[in-house]
Length: 203
Image 1 (cartoon, rainbow, N blue to C red):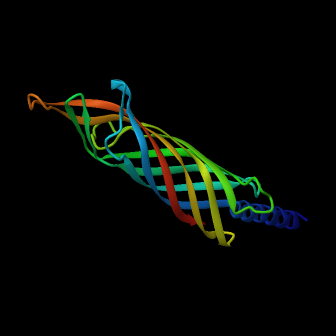
Image 2 (image 1 turned 135 degrees about the horizontal axis):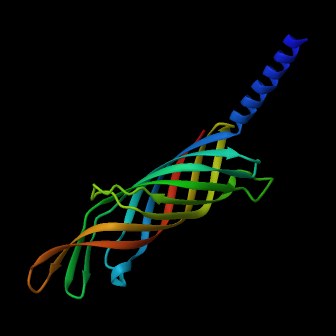
């Protein structure tokens, strides 16, 4: 009897583990962010004379709570482009900045009869690396719509388009005075608004 009970418990645990694993999904997304505008927060000015952009790779793990609701955590690595800014006769030259941001993510499929289409949102914060000037900290937020074409339950293609709000704290900038030619370095805090396009894989 004890052997039978043990076998039954083992069987239930195994089935539960298999079922639980079946509800787990991984995603790998390659995203391009086309900047709409960027604000230099601490100088109260809007950067309009260059095209901000970034390229990022995002890896996430999602749990399928229901066929309509998936949620989980992820990690986003992005490279933000360099820029030359002009403001009141002063040139601001930035360097490429990287960000390394863990985030929370959620996908909601509002149409039960068409589960491939979804709404999504991400919220994260870039890890500060105080000893590196090439990494910036700051909040990131994504929101948009997407479509997954699944070949199998754990393999498919993913596409989405959305809005991205990116805070770039601690951007090193070389400041050049056009009248005197003198250069100095400052640290700037920027806020970037972008539209994003992503393609990836679902596992």
